[in-house]
Image (tube, rainbow, N blue to C red; front, side):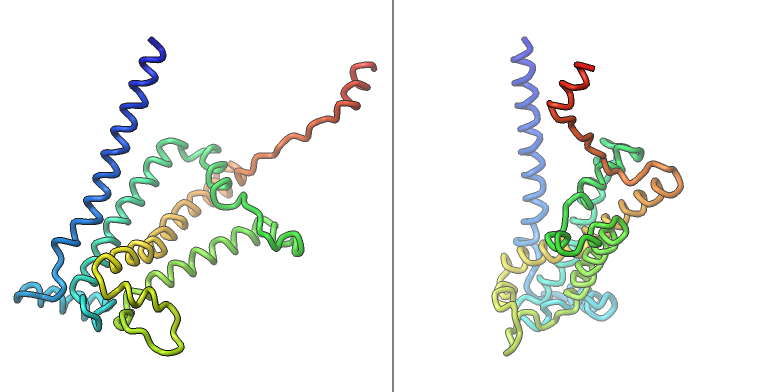
Length: 230
């Protein structure tokens, strides 16, 4: 009976995972068949003007897919934002906002050691490490935001790197692929700083600590034997 219940639970989870994957695939692929390359009527042209002139989203407007590129850029940003909200919601629902939250945030963002820390031990200081990690996320956010104004991203110029990216932005699938990556760079840091803010509140105002779990040192076997003899 226990094995049957276990198998039924696994089957239920696999069906749920397949459903989630299918839903995400539909959300990401729908624009491929819906968004036009150019504005085809008056309201689409007005929308195009509003996005480029008021919202200042001009990515790819000098390429062969100007309307598709800006629409997909905004669309995927909204989708990724709500997916990020859902992930944060389930994360907080599972771990709460107490000590377990501190431990998970520390383990996920700050536990890894820098390779240069062997040469420069000061890199492992808590404040330095958190500052460096936060600066990295801030840089990713700035890069993700700046990509919205790359109107000539489809044109490869001399002395400019990223020829593959410029080439991909000439095709719908390429636009979708790189926009998902760029949006991850601009959206994920928002949730990082939100989680970090709650982490800091817990540390300074609730006294929940940094979340670093101290691993107890094992007593050598010889010392254990001596202790037993005494």
